[in-house]
Amino acid sequence: MGVLSGIRVLEFEAIGPGPFGAMLLADMGADVLRVDRPAAPADLGPKSATGKRVDITGRGRRSVTLDLKQPDAQRAALALVERADVVIEGFRPGTMERLGLGPDTALARNPKLVYARMTGWGQSGPLADRAGHDLNYVALSGVLSGIGRAGQAPVPPLNLVGDYGGGGMLLALGVVAALLNVQRGGKGQVVDAAMTEGAAQLGAVFWGLLASGNWREERQSNVLDGGAPWYDNYRTRDGKYMSIGPVEGRFYAELLDKLGLAGKELPAQYDRKGWPVLREQFEAIFLTRTRDEWCAVFEGSDACIAPVLEFSEAPNHPHHRARGSFVEVAGVVQPAPAPRFLGTPSEISGPAPARGEHGAAALRDWGFDADGVAQLQAQGLGVMPPR
Image (tube, rainbow, N blue to C red; front, top):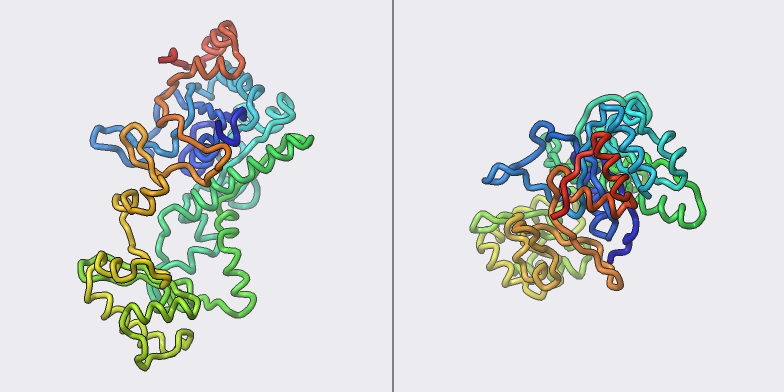
């Protein structure tokens, strides 16, 4: 029983940030029911060797299917909206309104509803109706300009900054805050989560550095963008990498000691003119040992250093194993729920559902009796019998 146990979330099928936000809520105990299209859209991501897409962000919810272009299906969706605490949708602005499922209609039916909308550009503004993806949203936020090597193009930061950090996680925070407001006696409301604004919020500290004159807009010319030689990644003898980041003087001194550089005449840590000299020293030294050998050298050290692990390696690191940071669900290794709640732990209730899987059981849990389920099915709602 998680912290959101008893909260009903109606999620309309989407990709990227919406499902990620719904996953976070499901991990925390919310009952998430996803409204899927009757048939899968075009390929939306990687597939396994069996030809099936491995959908980790779809974990922990159940599914019904509806063709929302049909009037009867829209009526069925409204019946679900009436019983939901939260609605999550990620269509272009105006789409839900055209389907008769917009927030005005939904809140008129369910005044306590939290209606969460996930888009790249937001619900208003000159770009609101334009197509885009994570990289575009992060680019417009200003954040992308600071990621990458000097003299080279900005580096796509996977789709972590827009879709997930500035998108789905921001959406989940907005949902929880709006739910808290409802529980305190407030009204339901719309949560307008825009990835470009979320990405900008993730970069708040850099606007502060810019305003104080402590941020240079040339890539790799600052401490946190790889400009400082002691805040970067270094290749090891076996072609792998070690990350270092001893910003504080006492930790930097420990780094130099472990590298065998203590006592040598070197530029001061924050002497920018001396950074190229320090970088050459670090590059040469790290190439003398393998990544695992360097891990042994720095075992128990406060030098702010860690191996750069691949996705396949990370779950097996002793720290992750000790904390159970990764779990296996239906044969797939994946991150465990986070953050942790010691009183009401989060858990993964199951892998991503097939379309319509367990829908009848979900509808009964949502308060529909046998006649109600039959009526929804007559309106085009696709459900499969419970297993």
